[in-house]
Amino acid sequence: MHASVIEAVSGYYLHSNANLGGPFETSQASDAVLSGARAELAAMLGCDAGEVVFGANMTTLTFHASRALTRDLGEGDEILVTRVDHDGNVAPWVLAARDRGVTVRQVDIDPEACLIDLDDFAAKLSNRTRVAAFNWASNGAGTISDAAAMCRMAREAGALSYVDAVQYAPHGPMDVHALGCDFLVCSAYKFYGPHVGVLYGRAELLERIKPYKVRPAHDEPPGSWETGTVNLEGIAGTAAAARYLVSIGAEAITGYERLLTERLIEGLDRIDGVHQYGTRDLDRRVPTVTFTVEGRSPAAVAAALGAQGIFVWDGNYYALELMERLGLEQNGGAVRVGAAHYTTAEEIDRFLEAVAAL
Image (cartoon, rainbow, N blue to C red; front, side, top):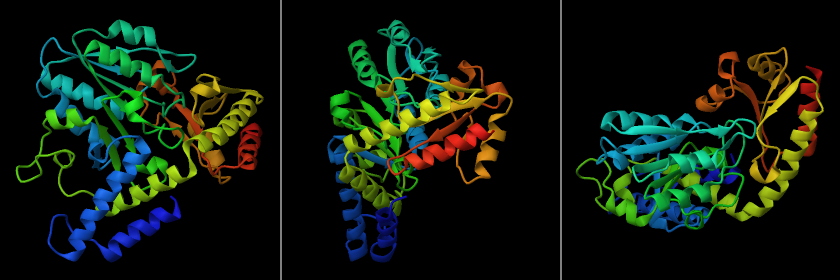
C-alpha cells in the first residue's frame, strides 16, 4: 500500500468521517471525497466520473450486477463464462442463471497457453447470448486475454460484456471506452489501495438497467448502484491509489515489469523439475507466474519459500476452473509468484535461487 493511500484514509477519519448528503461541514467534506474519487478513477479507467460505481469488492459488485443484468432473463437465454476466470466472475453468473432458468455455456481455453480460445468463444456466442463474462488477465496464470476482440464479438452478437480487470489493473493501461466493454470491474487492493471494489458501467446501461436497492436510495446512477453507505474512508484511499498509478504512467510500469517477467520465466526454465503454465509471449502476460516443482506439493514449496521471507501463494487462488482444466486441483493447485513495479531484479534472483535450492 502506498504511503499516500494511508495518508488519505487517515485524513478522511480526521477531517470528514460523516455520512453523505448533510448540510454540515463533515458531511459536505464526505460528498467532496466521493465526487473526487469518481474523477480520479475515471482518469485511471478512461471513462466519465458518472460511470464509476464503488462497492465492497469485485465479487460483491459482480453478485450485485449479475442480479440486475439477469432480472428480466429466462428460459432460452444464455450466459457465457470461461475456464480461466476467477470464480468471482463465474459463480455469480452461474447462480443468477440458475435462479432465472438461464443456460450457462462455458468457453474453453488453450491449456498450453492458458488463453481463452477465441474460436470457441465465437462458436458459443449466439443471438441467445445475453452476457459474456471474461477476464482481461488471469489471476491463475498471469495471461492477458484478447478482451477487446471478445467485447467486439459480444457487441456484434447483441450481448453485454462484463470484464474482470482485477489482475490487469496494476500492470497495464486501461481505456474502457477504447476497449469497448459494457461493464468492467477491478479491486483497489490489487493496485495498492484498500479493499474496495470499483465497477465501470456504460452510462446508458447504468441508467436503463435498474439495480436492486432500498427505496430511499438515489434513483439516478451511479449512486443507485451503490447499496447502503459506501466505504468512504476506503474510497478516499482508492482515489489516492489511482492517482499514484496515473502519476507513474501505465507505459512505464508495463515496460519495467516486462523485464521482470522475462527474468522470472527464463530463470524458472533453467531449474530442473519446475514446470510453468501459460504462454511465454511477453505481450500476453502480466508479471504473475504459476508453476509446480516436481516431487513437492505447492503448499510445501510455498511454506519453504515463506520461511525464507519470500511470499508466494499456493492453491487455486479462486481460479478453480483453470486448476481443474489443467488437472492441478486434485494435487493442491500450483505455486504463484508475482512481481510489481517496485520489485527489483535482485529480488527476482533471490527467489530463483531459493526455488533452485529446493
